[in-house]
Each structure stands twice: as structure tokens, then as C-alpha cells.
Image (cartoon, rainbow, N blue to C red; front, side, top):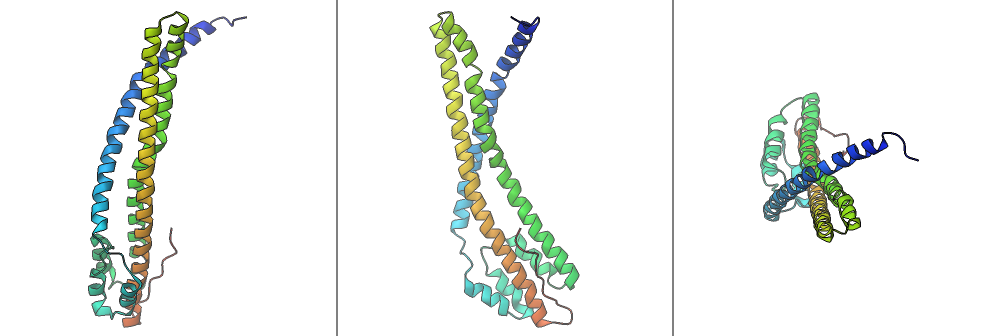
Length: 223
């Protein structure tokens, strides 16, 4: 027993679903281009990071033991810390305790926000890529099965080609974006930990050198 009007609703749903095929394919092509750009950025970032020396215990110890007036010189030797972070730390080192605490915390928050914004680009593609690939697989299967019932093997073959192509593209885009995100997350986590450690040590130098006005900054823990 068919419900009156259900055939019209089914036809409307069919038209809507089939009309999504072109946007889905365009979306996959956009994601593919975007993830290739992100891959190029990752390779360039890798080349830059490969030239930078990691911070070891001795360097951190020298920063902790450095006199107040020479701490910024020791800070400049730390290649793993971004230059804009070094400049910001030097600018706030002479501020009072409350100001240093707020400004240093804000600096760390800004670095985290930048890292998250970069990661979100590829993490979004990693989630949407396979979804678009699945949609591109299912949408042409309906007409393909209808063509099979009508004996039109040529139309069925065309539908299957589109279905398999979108599946492969979606999985490739999602997998590549996921790998880029994991690699960058490892880099940024390490960098943020180093920034926080250096921030604590550098601002702590002020307390040792001038206890009356330079109180050590202690952050609220890694985020």
C-alpha cells in the first residue's frame, strides 16, 4: 500500500540528491587542491625546522642562571624559539609582576591560537574529504542501478566510474590531510612546550636580579 503523495516526495528527494553530485565533485577538487597546497607548506616548514637546532638542557640552564641585564642575549641564541616570541619577551621583561604575568600568558595564548588555526585547516579536510567521497559514491549508484534494470550497461559503467573515482579522491584527500595534521601537531606541541619553559625561565631571571620589582612569572600550566 502506497501513501498518497509519497511518489512525489520520492521524486523530489531524488532530484535533490542527484543535484548534489556536481557540488560534491567540485568540493573534492577544491579539497584536493587545498591539501596539495598544505603539503607544500609542510615541506617548506620541514626544511626550515631541519636547520634549527633543538634547545638542550645546557641552554635552558644558561638562561636560568643568566643575570638580568644579559638574559636577552642568552635568549637570542635559542634558535628553536620564534623570533617574534623573543622580541615580545624582551619587550615585557621590564614590566611589573602583574603586567608580566598577563602579557606572558597572552603571548602563550596567541601562539596556541595560531597553531590551532593552522591545524584546523587540514583537520577539517580530513573529516570532510571522506564524507564527500562517500556522497560521490552513493549519489550515482541510484541511477546506475536503474540503468542496470533497464539493461543500459553503458550508463551503469559511467555511474560506477564516477562512484569509484570520488571514493578514491575522498580517501586520498582525507588520509593526506590527516597525516599533515598529525605531523604539525607534533611539531607545534613541542614548540609550545619550549616556549612556555623559556617564558618561565626568562621571566624568572628578573626576580633573581631585582627582587624588589622583578617577580618571577609562573604560568598556569601547559594548555
